[in-house]
Length: 146
Image (cartoon, rainbow, N blue to C red; front, side, top):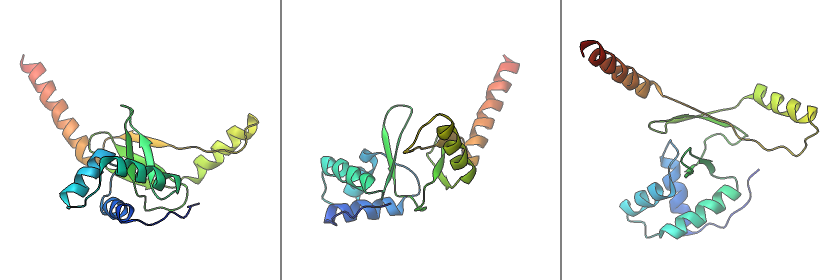
């Protein structure tokens, strides 16, 4: 459910920039893209607006293993999850009714109500899987010849 947020020039620029990107990005990366596009906006304004957009349900935020927040304007409006490449951040959104049923069953069995959950699956996209295999092959070859 999305809340109504007041449209400002900065918020519109942020949403337009997020809409043009397919993958999650940090606030700093977003700020850099806006500056490269000659959008006069401060880094604190980017952070403040991103939080408003997250609160309104217009932007998703994830926390990386390093503790950094990354943001994305999702294409799926209903509750969904993400598959992310650990190397490049390429993201695929998916809806998983079976996961929702499982979460509700586990909660019910344990007396929990008012559920909220997120699920992100991290791995290697096809491009970076090939790179990892090539690197692995190179390491194996070096090991054999050494």
